[in-house]
Image 1 (cartoon, helix red, strand yellow):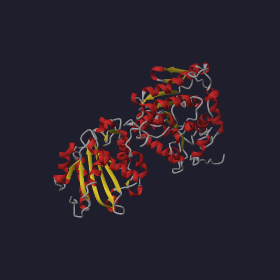
Image 2 (tube, rainbow, N blue to C red):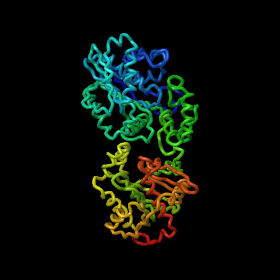
Image 3 (cartoon, helix red, strand yellow):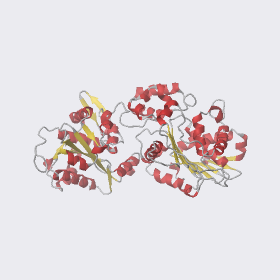
Length: 557
């Protein structure tokens, strides 16, 4: 056979997903292998479906395309897999767990190796059960399979009595993943691993055995996260999009992503029920449109987190800044105002004539949020934001829910993780001193609750107590919040697109009481908004009518 050439990029995916065409970018490299696998896959019985049909009686073509690509990538005589890494992103209720179980049973049944190991890795015991039960039911519903396979429900293990091959379904929280020598691994609900602090090491440990197996493969399945993508899920999603779009060439990696095109997200076309089919290829089969409409109505009635969760789970809309109805108004304009070419502190210092500093938070269990707000020389009516934050390493243990996100921000350079209390204040004070030494510093707005520790750090860098102003919180931030909204709405507040600050903006929940706007940490819950409050503190100082008088160091007010 001539050398095979293929691509896993799909540059026309937007047209394809709109018309319901296949999103699998490559036909089976070895059709006979694909056909053999699909035949077995289609013969499996769906015990939890009315009438207990076989998969082949009710399955949509997109499933066969995906299964064919997986098994059709293996050479029939050398057994080498040309494509060995797969990722499927699809909305909830599109039979993802059932497909997972059927794929792994197919792999185990077709494998001629003695004592092969297969693994389904789930983030929790509940998700593990969701994958194990369909496999169990498929075996029990077929006399031949029931005679061939031994099932051990208490350990979620299925064993082939002839080849001694095993399929184990394990949960990350069982702590039983280590030392796996699996030939094939399926990772279910990858988005939930994005909330697990040690997820990367768990997955690395589970997939380590694949390095020695030419026939090895890993399949990752997920819906969208109900929070902004983080950790291993964000890394996978970024790679998948880059490969799909042709930005990264990786013929060994095949992503299939059921998500809305960017234009439909921007126009909120995903809210139209006529478009629900775009991320639900099983609509009319395992997904019922009337059920979706009912869930949507209930979510809209509850508002807030409920509607964001509906769009994420059932329509695969990535959680960003503008899904919640209790969001801060400024969030609607934040992404629009990103200017990557303006990113970085050197740009701000070179292109602004006045810079104010805002500080909020800090302590052993909180972020220290820091913002520099610059007035652009070329347009004094326009402002530019730069942000940084610090956190003590102990927070990674105390706030495990957001630990993967914090580690992402550290890698991106927006967050500094310190080991000793006080390091964060010293580093922050040094940055403010740098602005002062450039002759640009217009003032410092600080969180009154951390007044003493902030002032001590500033004192050590040559500042007087009077150089900092305590900015009162609560309703007294209203004017600063509204000014930030106005600047964003007018297109006169810019930023470099820093992920941590965007995350903080997305976390900010606004509450209107009379004429006052409240954005509080209590309303945000475990999510952090310290950089946002720091922004409002910087805005407070920037609004001083006396600001801008030219003098060295701190501009005299």
